[in-house]
Length: 369
Image (tube, rainbow, N blue to C red; front, top):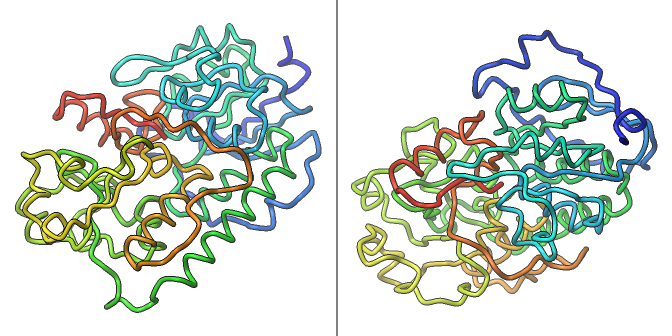
């Protein structure tokens, strides 16, 4: 057992925090970029989304990731060997299938017993994990760090830096976040800064669902020089479902859709189902359907800058490098496009849209952040 040696939980909130209703967690605060560069030292204490101060006494040797974005980040930081458990949607990463899969089902559910059986020093959990799951793990003596929902690219950068600090990978995190910022800056320099030059963009998740402007995907579209049509729709949902009439009336200039890496160069007709209302838009008529890697666009992790660059190149005919070079790339396989809600548990905070998609579409449209 490593837990007694590695981790101590210091509860800084009232007990009611642990049983707060879905969506009760605080929003992502602005990133503090200087934090990415500070040296790793232990013990280290970080406050998580449940308002719990998590203290790690020593560098964790065994890490479980309950969401694929945390797994992707560990791979990018070059510390995949420390990961002993992954979610069902994290197995797309190289060698990840050799780890214990600690979630399953539709919608996804965390297997608490499997996590405990791995004797982890640290569990990295998304904002969507059930509060009861976190409570059960912590009651078993497991250290759980629960991330806030990332609503901006800065939030993704800070999440990467935080994982670096918690896992003793500060140098790798500094290199990765520096390259992420450099890529974002290169995109900003390459795309027009006037609203009139921005194409109107619809991010096509399927069944009318899309990413709102208050999401990290919406932020990526804006950073790539596009105007997200969801910003013009009267909704406060992070991932609203637009009616066919609204999509047609908004008439996007460009449609972006997430696909597996082997389909990135597919034609518009191959990317859009014959029955989809997208075929009634200017974007489809002009062939402006942009495919991006679904595992990169739908996960708040370092590779988000790759679809950003790909979108910028498509929107504005730029030639920005679309590959993040800080660490080896993930594999080229992916499953079907899914709403980006970073799931570990299907009824967790922030999972409502994904659960609705599952119910309405009857497909494997579950969260994979």
